[in-house]
Length: 393
Picture (cartoon, rainbow, N blue to C red):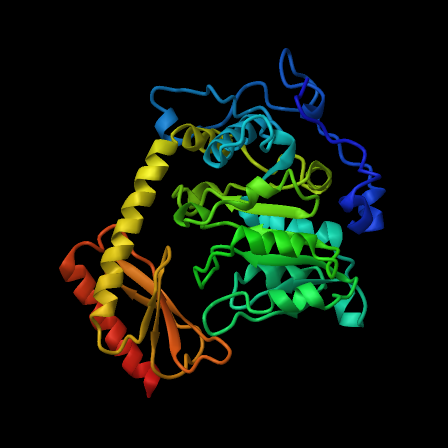
């Protein structure tokens, strides 16, 4: 039997209060692996002759240990347990940390973003009705994309010139409309790199002015000195944390991400998701990564070390007015950023960012694995200088 199943939707708790009625009344699709995942399996119309091919490295010698002709586990419980063990260890949680029932596993964190909007937000923006999400621009663009696809409204609370979530005080004191169901907080910010203190997350989650769900997107959390908000999930019934293996883990190619939240929210996500949303190859690679966190931590240290090199080099440039030290380097130059602009060179890339009330233009660069090579840095700086001259004119 499968260790975790789709179940009836929750009838109590925050999820039951906020979710769309049609989602709460949904009878989840039950796939073959919801009931049986071992023994002689004749229940899913699988090809018993085996797969037509295998990953390149498994062809010679032939190795089909993953049984790719069989459907994968619908819930990736082993991967979830490994994630819980690692994050609980980081937080020093003993016995009261996150458990697999707190974790949704999906196709990157993008799947979780879309699912949360579909589950909790009633469509209807184009008709002047329906629910809304709140975002804090500049921020990750998929929040807007998913809201627009689902015909959901978008409310914005822009960051201030110092890259802070400027209006947390406004949210504390001003009653938000009931249609504001989801508040997306990117921490560390994308593209700003600014981390939001857990004290601010607590205030948002406990604010009497907001009754929705606080979603903390932690795609870059492993590069931050601010602790993960996963430690708050067992304390609050309205905090959901998004994480991914795409960034610090360096596994963007396998498309694996997580939502960590209250079990009633996670249950709805499991009920609404596609039957086999994460494949066996992804699950296998994700499990190996979570078993080998020593490599993750070594790589994080190396990237942060290269960041320090880049920061020093940026500070030496006469046209840079400020450097914001985070995972990727954000720096200010005089003038206005005229739209999004990519800056690519040997070892790095960047983009333009405009902030309200900020006279300078902000540029972002990502340290690559060869940024310690001075000639590559200088080559990239030459390109940045020429691009800045073009932007400024």
